[in-house]
Image (cartoon, rainbow, N blue to C red):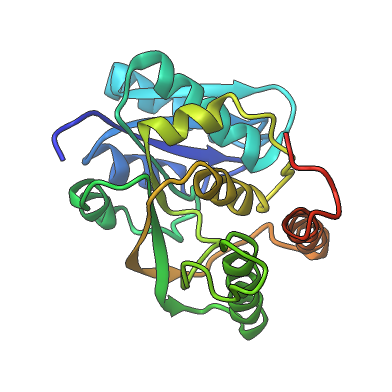
Length: 240
């Protein structure tokens, strides 16, 4: 895929890993990092890297922490502004191997490619169960028809390592997002599906590291899934 690709990396207090992640990603594509009001040395490290990489590294600074949705959405707005053809989102904490970027870039044309975590390292059992259950719920929520229980039968609906097509990241860039945290990945998937976007999966190896996933974040994801279910059953109005 020779078209222009932008890698978007939301980051909050990632001083320990952000340089390695940026260097790994920029070997394959331009990079935009959203520094989500980091209080550690992340801004200093990014400023140093900008001097080295120039226009190939774009940094968006949030003065107030907004979490993943706004971090990725602002990166997508930049991609729209600069005319990129594809956006790839990845984690700032070394959970996502930058080596897969080449595979994402060469993957056949479709609207969303999800990095499906078929191989995992150090992932707690409870996290595996939550991801498995989320996939079941999301497949049903996005299926056509009340009795279609399996939908597209996607294996991993919550992975944040993804490639979005231009039509899809353009929609997400201006969408009035409801998500607050990791539920963004569920909402973005629903936006693509509701706009009849094509969705495929790319097997990846996922390494569990430090994570901001907690009970509050889990509660938000459950609440978002509940909204999708109620809309599917036409018990609440569609959104937006």
